[in-house]
Amino acid sequence: AGEMISTPVPSKWVQINRNTYVLYHGRVTWSEAATFCRAQGARLAILKSSMAINIITNSMTKTRP
Image 1 (tube, rainbow, N blue to C red):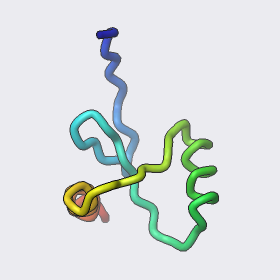
Image 2 (cartoon, rainbow, N blue to C red):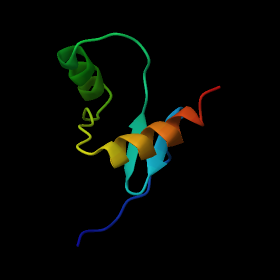
Image 3 (cartoon, helix red, strand yellow):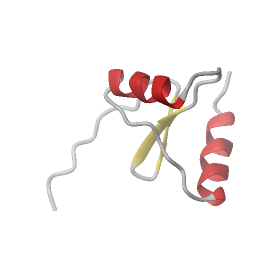
Image 4 (cartoon, rainbow, N blue to C red):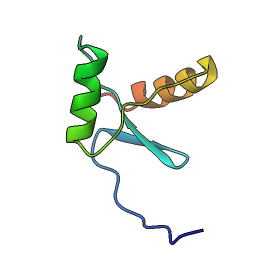
């Protein structure tokens, strides 16, 4: 395995295991969301299970101001 580099998690982003997520509220198309993520140097998350959706949603809503 390669060397692990640790960088600070930006404000409003939540780290869960080895992944970092940000939750934006608003109506955008999938394409607009993917473009926004790429501009941030990120990828749009595709959650494939209700368990993953619940874990991430619960973690992120706890961090809302």
